[in-house]
Image (cartoon, rainbow, N blue to C red):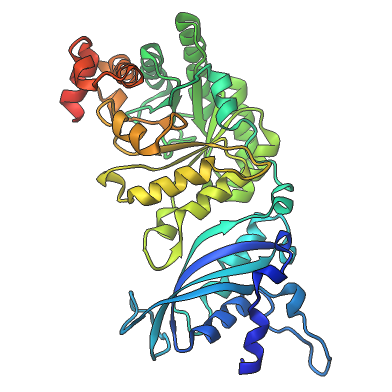
Amino acid sequence: MQPADIEGFFADPATLDLDRYLILDYTLECVGDPRLAMAHLCSEQSTAQWKRVDVDEDLRPRFAAKVIGMEVLEEREALSYPVTQAAEGRIFACRVRIAHPHENFGPRIPNLLSAVCGEGPFFTPGIPLIKLMDIQFPQVFLSAFQGPRFGVQGLRDLLNAHDRPIFLGVIKPNIGLPPEAFSAIASEAWMGGLDIAKDDEMLADPDWSPLEARCRHLGEARRQAEQATGTPKMYMANITDEVDRLTELHDIAVERGANALLVNAMPVGLSAVRMLRKHTQVPLFGHFPFIAAFSRLPHYGIHSRVITRLQRLAGYDSVIMPGFGPRMMTSDEEVMANVRACLEDMGPIKPCLPVPGGSDSAATLQRVYEKVGSVDFGFVPGRGVFGHAMGPRGGAASIRQAWDALARGVPVAEQARQYPELARALEQFQ
């Protein structure tokens, strides 16, 4: 790229109609002139060649991605991670903000990802390390998507669960139980106060626990628990599978008694989730397999908040994400970035319920509540309910007892003096 060509990939944001652009935030490490590297970054993800040979034209004003802000953070002696065949020279760590015209790909998630996370950004000359940190959408782009059917408020209305977190539980043992035994322990948890009993993200439609039989047993157990407790309950069945089976498995699960569905977002693809959103009449929950492979390295890949935003855009009513504490190896800052991505304003796209999880129990509920800073979250123990020494009913009861203490401003340890289920949970999981 000639020096005179570089300026075609830079713009003052005040001169742009920002309704025409997605705004992308990247951090990167480049070799050599940062302005040249940024121009290459914009070129590779949009108009890599902006004119025909022997034709007087320039496609960049309309179609080029454009740098609207950049900052050189520091000069480094070496890359954060070695990259095979990376260019050699002075290394600069930078942050860059890019406006990308969304008419280049339209309201299509696969095409969007192909542009902003594809060959262009990750194979840009002079940029061996790059991470997409955030993405912002204009209203006109968002209006082409349905987003969550129910969202936070819709889930609360379905469950009659207001002014408190929604309590989920991952049925354990998660792998190996036949449907009859699986439904029996879910029933106990519902009777103890759980709102939602869910399949593990790894349990789908194996021969030893076919989805049809599992949903039939769990659906009946759910209805009995609703009658016994007088409160709505949900069974969340995992229908993650090959894309061409998703609608079939959806129909089987819902017909047999599942009234919420789990679909692992990245393994099946966000376009498949969007297809299901158009088909389903029950809430969709996303889980996070495969996301850490994109997001964990601090200087390379895609920040998990980007994938959370896209899951909400695709139509998930709730996004289950790595939560607080050392078990999930995710910083509190990143967890909260994902929580905010679920709840913050996205124009016509409803907020979806954030569910930060990982080794939770009655002993960790206060920590999660205080970190989130509101009741708009799902709390999702596994062994904290189903591994409780007094059984799933006792485990679920301990969660509700801990919440009752928090809601009344009573120390959880003090509450435990009156409730053996809570006392046992604090002893077992503290």
